[in-house]
Picture 1 (tube, rainbow, N blue to C red):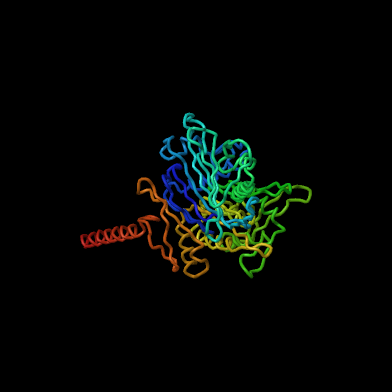
Picture 2: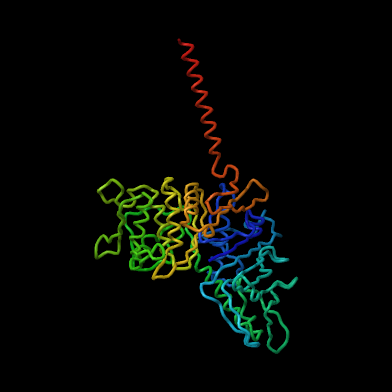
Length: 467
């Protein structure tokens, strides 16, 4: 689970500042305020980790990628090629990382890792990305145990030196030489291990970093429209897909799974959990996925809406159901320890359903499977006032602890834009509401009252004139 994040010189952000990441992390702001850039940056790093090109510092994306960010000049702040993209984050490890220094015998362990990197264009070649530095820090109970990193030598495009703090690297006998460039933006190359007697543990750091990005999944704001028939060959998709295209396949693949919505709450079949949530949101009465025949690998999704006796196909009900179904399925389908990035999960939902969706998200972070907490983290970009208001209410009611919700507002009134934390107290109150955060509600009410008074006065004058 991500604990902190900071991004500098990326797209519209000179500096996001340190973002506190919680089990539910929310980002608000006007259109084109830069809030989507935060998720895009993380997805670009995921794409890079999964790219077969070990030498590519960043993989900005292609035709079928979650994000396509273009060239470095297009993604760097103010499109100034001299700017360097710098980023830091910290995450908790699902299992404690332990190793021993083979030279001294000293044992090290940690439950958190932090990472720092700086990327820019080469000194001479203005087209090739170069990793100027990377640094890992291993922490236990918030205390630093050691740090190790690589820094590019001045003027040398692919020569790096390795430095460590609280750990003495012992090089093997032989001539002094410097390792080559790191792997992608994060990885120690094999030469670091080969050159030192006690640097094997850096491979574990590389692996933990890759596991972090394997746990990341993304659902975009525009989901695919509903179909009348869905084919499924028995494969288990990794996720519902960037646009929810694998939603029904995920439901079918998860039929043997049972999910509990909290400690000491009964576990129920996956499909039943989805149906319950749709009903609680006031969208349907019943929901089922059925094969059209035993001989064919095709399935249909049937729903029964409130006040109706008839079962109908998914395309025959409101568009909002087909748009929120991938959201619900992704939240409960994702493996334990997943980080789910979502843009506008509330899209095409009426206000009451948007409020209820916040309750679903609380259930997601509390959910358990096989008696163990799923530890899901939700990173949500939203425009919904109703979603936030329900979370505020639940904080006041102690349904969700205040520290499990983090909310930020992209403020473009300042230059450069700033990402400001919303200060939510234990009563659910936001202490620093930005001006016109969700529009000028009081202004609209006041102007409506003035207009109504003006009309009444005009009507009274007409009546007096006619009498």
